[in-house]
Structures are given as C-alpha cells and as structure tokens.
Image (cartoon, rainbow, N blue to C red; front, side, top):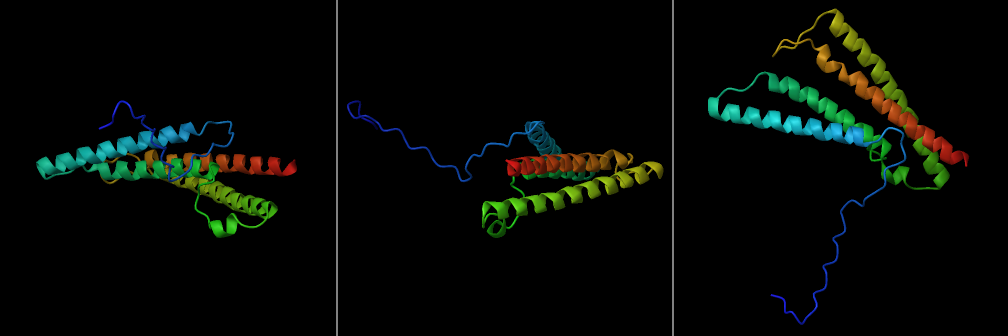
Length: 179
C-alpha cells in the first residue's frame, strides 16, 4: 500500500527479449505478408478448434480439415519466409555472416541472397509445372475431392513473392555498396 506523502517511482520498462528493429524501406509494404500470416494462422486455429470440438462431442472428425490445414500451413510458412528474408531474420550462421569486415559481410549477404533468389526462381518454375500437371490430369484431393491445383497454385505464387522480395533485398544491397 502506498502512502500519499511518498512519491512512487515509475517502474522501469522491461527490455524486450528481441529488440525492435525498423523494417527496411520497401515498395510493397511488409504488412501485406504480416496480415496474410495473421489471417491464415487465425483460420488454421479456428479450423483446428472446431475439429477438436466435433471430435470430442461426436467421436468423428471432419475429413477436410487435414487437407485445408496442410494448405494453410504452406501459405503461412511461405508468408513468414517472405518477410524473414526482407527483415534479414532467415536462418543463417551468425558466426560467419555477422563477423569480419563490412565488405566481407556485404559479399556474404550478396552471395546468400543470390543463392536464395535462384532457389526460389527454380521453385516457382517447378511448382508452376506441378500445377499445370495437376490441372491437365485433373487430380483431386482424397478427402473432399476438389482439384488439387486449388491448393498447389499458391506455392508458385508465394515462391515468386519470396523471389521478388529477395530481388528487392539484392537491389538494396547493390545500391548501398555503390555509394
């Protein structure tokens, strides 16, 4: 209990575990992928919760929830990956990437982003071929019988988005080195 004659010192703010960093200047806002990830995660949680309730009360489960959940997890992973590459939060060996001279760090960043760009361009091309095959051969999903290309069409879209984000990161790296 505080006394009115003794001033109360405000509590010091708690330092966050991960310091807040400014997002890099990008043409397409990162909030697009952030909100996509939030929405997909909310839908995924809702579907899973409803399935748990149905299974609890009826000893049955919805057959379609697993297919939809796998699809949503892929979209969630790709949306998170897209922002991770732009924010430089992707998996890397920091003992190698963040040590040495700034010129060495820049060269490593250019090399790693180039490899990432090539990988996602390849993934985009190959997943487009997959979608075309699924469309041509009229493959359907086992649980609900919808065309599988409805699910897989998002893989090349999200892979292309990551490739474009990585291209933007490369462009920013090349521009800062030219100065």
